Image 1 (cartoon, rainbow, N blue to C red):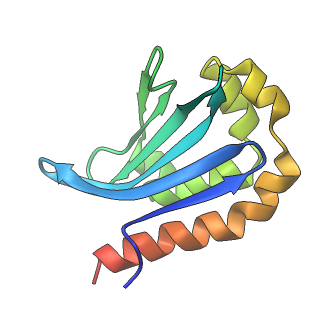
Image 2 (cartoon, rainbow, N blue to C red):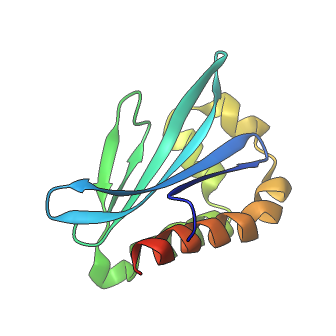
Image 3 (cartoon, one colour):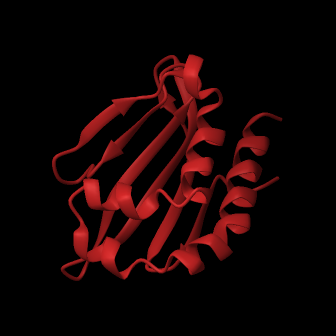
Length: 131
């Protein structure tokens, strides 16, 4: 059985993943994109790939702008989230969250190289919960 959580470091950020089933009537994988801001480990973005009400957050520890994901248009929330990372949208999303210095230092080649590990870890965590 896969672990219920995982961390993958890539290009100046860390993808911290865990399965959440502590939400009334909903559950799913939570992916935090973390980075160092003023010497502190900070949650820059969070993607709550829930089955019923998936959403994502810009700057959860700051302004916490929350956007709901339309499953009709986006399809599977986890696939949509991973596709954002794979399509190179991470820098722009980190900038929108208000972390320009982290975005400027992001090594997109390293993030791209780490994507198989991120995808594999995410899929393993979800598969372990679906058993």
